[in-house]
Length: 204
Ligand code: GLN
Image (cartoon, rainbow, N blue to C red; front, side, top):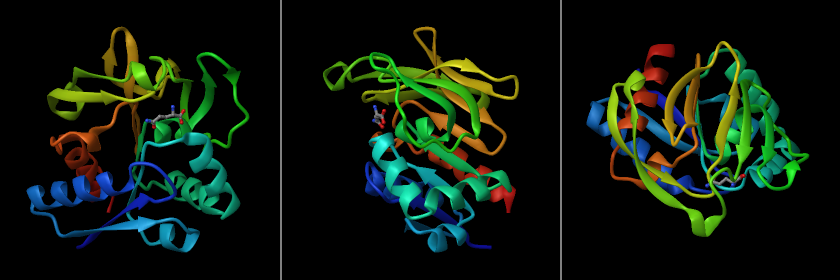
């Protein structure tokens, strides 16, 4: 059975996720296809979706206007696995506010039961890399690339903390929803994408 994995292609790290997901499929020996998706019709076809990093306000607003947000929400609610990276994590959340400007009136999917703090580690020039671990995903050492990254300040009881950095939560899982504050597509390590591919496979 061929897995169809979609990369939401509105803005942000789209190609990097296409390539890393293709590499993950190849390394797992899994037959599958990685598709760039944007419209509700395209999103309807996929078994799993990655929402890349970029600018959450822009990805959210454009996806709201073309009806993609509604389709994504329906599919996640009916069990489709989703990986939200950085801006993608913000979009999945129920509550997001900026560290400096506070509440921003931005469209959210309102599914992941967390409070997200946007730009939690500072501005672009405060971007950094750090070694993190995600034992619950079977990944003991991973290079986290943080670019204007959010962190998670509160989690609901159904949310598992997957990783912390400097006491801040930077990766979480809630059933079929996986979210990271850092960018796994910007390393040569496919471990997290492979973990996501296995979530998609299990859900089929
Ligand atoms: N700071 C961005 C936002 O709030 C996210 C940054 C990123 O995805 N690298 O949308």
